[in-house]
Image 1: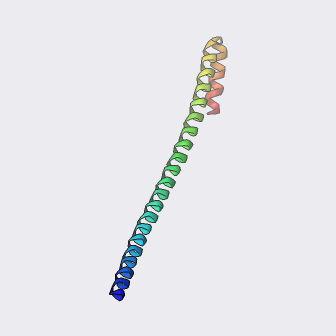
Image 2 (image 1 turned 60 degrees about the vertical axis):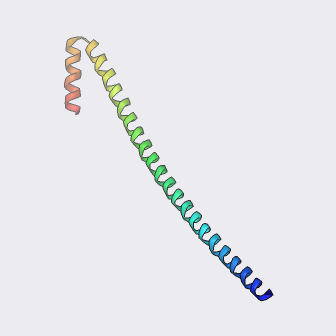
Image 3 (image 1 turned 90 degrees about the vertical axis):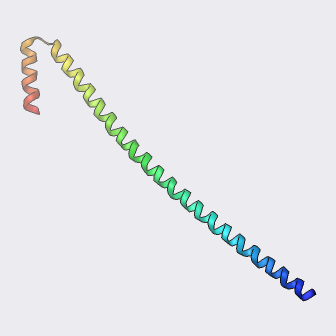
Length: 91
C-alpha cells in the first residue's frame, strides 16, 4: 500500500506540474499578445500625432495667408494690384 500511495502522489504532482506549465505558457502567450497590441496602439498614436502636427501647420499657414489677403484687400487698388502681381509671380 505504501508504494501505491507514493505512485499516486507522484502522479498527482506530475499532473499538477503539467497543469501549471500549461497555465504559465498560456499566460505568457497572453502577455506577449498584449504587449504586441500595445505597440500597435503606440504606433497608431504616433502616426496620428504626426498627421495632427502636419494639419495644424497647414492650418496655421492658411490662416496667415488669409490674414495677408485680408490686409491686401484693405490697401488702395493700385497697391493691391502690385501686391497681387508680385504674389502671382512668386508662386
